[in-house]
Amino acid sequence: MSEHSHQQRQQKLKEKVDARIDAAQQEKGLFLIITGNGKGKSTSAFGTVARAAGHGFKCGVAQYIKGTWACGERDLLSQHGVDFHVMSTGFTWDTQDKTADTQAAQKIWSACKTMLSDPGYDLVVLDEITYMITYGYIDLDDVIATISQRPSEQSVLITGRGAHRRLVEMADTVSEVRNVKHAFDAGVKARQGIDW
Ligand code: ATP
Ligand code: MG
Image (tube, rainbow, N blue to C red):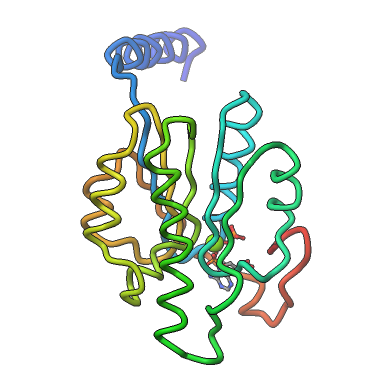
């Protein structure tokens, strides 16, 4: 391609992008979902929290599964005014105690509902909440109603595999992280600073 036609093409592309930027006039809090089987969902959510907190916005994070595990982002971000609600007791893969798990999930969900009705929060992250919905620990209709009734300037971000179709439909932005390969499948241990 000649230098000239390359330039012409780039100019056309720029005009198109500029037109789309001008057309996007709506201002509102967003509902985002990061789903899929690949690695990068929670790290993306925490990256967004770092971005928002860096602008001085108030953020709250609920961790639905790995609460009792160490978490580098939690240690860092909680020092910078980010509120964390962690599902610490009750939920364990080992006991398979549905009543205790439901109670643990409900407890943190009620803290989430408080954040999701408080306009003081600019961003609320519900990390791994998709599993709670899949297992029936938290009611899908309740989640949908709570998210739709949240303050209009508030953004909410959900992570976890298998996001429900109805959540995907109502979200503004949905990204699916595809697994191309993962070190774990080759027998490599989860690594501090990379995996948690
Ligand atoms: P991360 O927290 O690294 O962004 P994630 O949130 O996308 O990962 P989860 O399903 O929440 O993924 O799993 C969390 C843990 O499982 C992480 O330690 C991650 O490295 C690991 N993991 C993620 N995807 C896979 C995969 N496809 N195979 C094996 N392990 C995975
Ligand atoms: Mg995750």
